[in-house]
Image 1: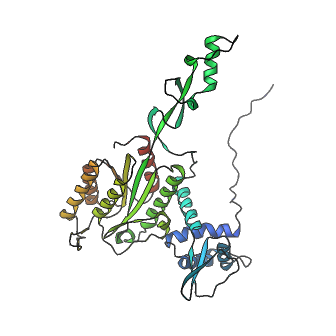
Image 2: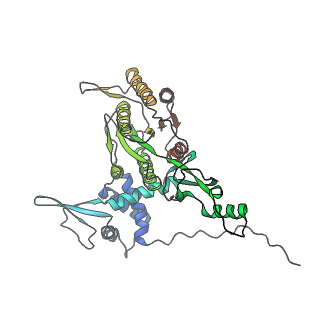
Image 3: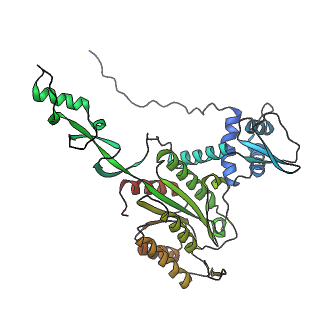
Length: 388
């Protein structure tokens, strides 16, 4: 008599990945270079300290060997002054330089840091082929739905499903002789893909590193991950990034690893003005603003070029300007999603009123889970077509 075998889980001891000495150090180095905002010397100093404490290297593979491998693999370059100007040597194995050069990271490593941020925050996301977003409306789009309907005048011949049409011909006319007419033809439905233009605003005021908490590094990682997500999974979407302190200015995606806070107040109005100016130039119907901030608006630039600043409480004049900008964005059909990484009750109340003026959304969160929240909100916004 045969006995039934019961299937279940088999547990085995965890085995760490078999990484080379370079790969082990490279994982740590990428994290350190993000925290140091691209400062290679500082990152290596930290790596040396960790090596002393945790014995990361051996006599057979030292920190100096690791640096030479970084050069050989094209992750760093050495720049040095030579007479008339600055020159660089990139990825030349065994080239020590003259000792007066400065080492910086390359575009290759910048891209790897963005990809690492994407993996850390959003998980390993499978890239879709053409990579855009469904609107929920079928028609003459470019994404297949897997559903069929009868052929209509004007449908392109490339959209006819020959397998389904031939099946209909056999059912309708029998298999004795082959007859295929227009009534047998079916086409596969497609969906339009909505394109989204997003501006990500990042607060770089001094409070982003106050109170013993590094808030700028998680925000920077989120920005890098979102940039990598959009450029790889949704290449028809656009992402612009701006930072705001006393003023606001755009930064290219490649500069994200180097982002630092400054001795700034928080000019939220300037950030919103720049974000809306950037979105006005976009042809996409769907537009949105994501704002990462931890502080209250405390600064305005006056028409004469001077700054009006007030860090005590919520300044009514500044706050009213923020509400006006939120209302203006609503009239332009630009929703603002605020990710508030502070929990002061009076600031949360300000964000609630700001969000109501815009008819947008707000998330009150600490640093943990910030990336997942932004990713989920981005995906949710792509599943629905925002009004233009």
